[in-house]
Image 1 (cartoon, one colour):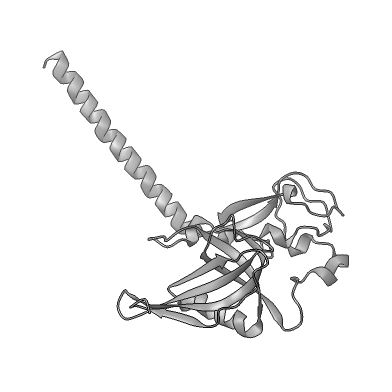
Image 2: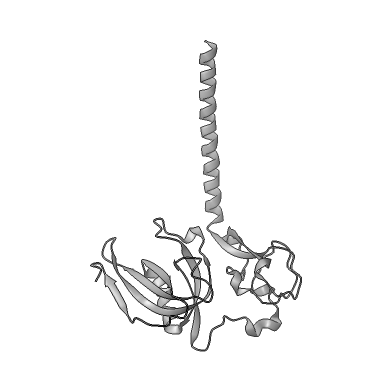
Length: 229
């Protein structure tokens, strides 16, 4: 056998063995992901935090962990912890949630809503740089029709205050994504909170449209169907 042919055979064998090894690694990774389950986001301390410290944005980081290992009560939204005093010291990388907040602050532990209001959490299409805490948005809901076509889009809610918002993790995006998504907490009535929960479960798509600063005008109910009418 010539030297050139022997070298070609060795190269071919190396490629085959490399492919088998890569396939085995991919299979092991897939099996491991299946065992661990889906990933969720939790808030952790970016540095050592002393007891009594009022939490600041620079104190926090978001980490993705398997849902089965996420501590009960761990916060998913950093905004929920800002300005709250810590009951005990938290080490770097330690989870943060309601259990770490001082009991003396319990009266302020709830979301900033008034009687008859609720803080509704949704994941929707929207620009993360515009849908931010303090902004006001309109909520569009697109329903499913017969087959794969949408039945129509409704201007469901107008002039809704955003209490907290952040870019939604990629895992929440659909396979055919129509744009960036945000995880937002909205100040709404009880009726609207129930409506948003149903829309989140059954609607084809929810979209948040940021309003201009100071614009409090209302258009009224509006529905556009398949014929764009």
